[in-house]
Length: 310
Image (cartoon, rainbow, N blue to C red):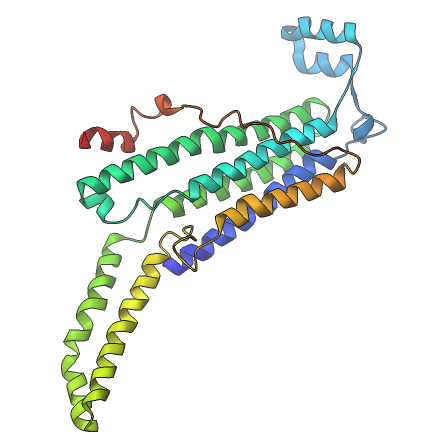
């Protein structure tokens, strides 16, 4: 089951990266000239009819201000850069979340220090998840609303929403893999099996030594049997958290996948979409450090664990 967790995590990372790339391309290059916006996306202007249809009676003051200032040209480079900024911060936040220490071992449930450590790690993860990850995900969704406001047809906006859904589903799948492990009963059985089976077969090793006339052969077989079972169990235990690449040779390199490659792919797409644009400047993440603990601490099981320990 642990090996399957690693493969599932890789599949979800691939889904997330693919959806993020397509989402940016959709915001940066979509053209809706068929939606009465001739000569197409780059020539689109917001006019009085657009503003009145969207704002209605409640937006008269802003509409009057727009009328006085004339029609506003849409800066699609700025729109695409805003979307790119939120996608970059979203990937960075997801990397930070997946790189948190493991907090789902048996000692994190059975011992006082383990429960305290788990509560602190999971509360930090909850903070990152609620503020930075879904904060930026919400702003990406708002970018789609901005496109609809400027005339994007509903069917094309629905396709972008589908990519957003794929990203959200992949993020939730990664969270489940990060926070939950294989059943404790199966892990206990595997550990006991790897420890107790070699002594139970000790008589078989003795019989091999007697039949072959070689004590060394019996000892080698017994030692190898014990080492193989213990090694197999340790391999499975290490892959319970497949994101810890710094301590696990087979772990997923989340920094390479979510920081390096995502940044390079999105910036490459920007250079292709806007070849005359200047260098991209990443703005500060407005959701970083945002305290949302008051929204969930009263009912959070992690906060309850901390209070019980104190």
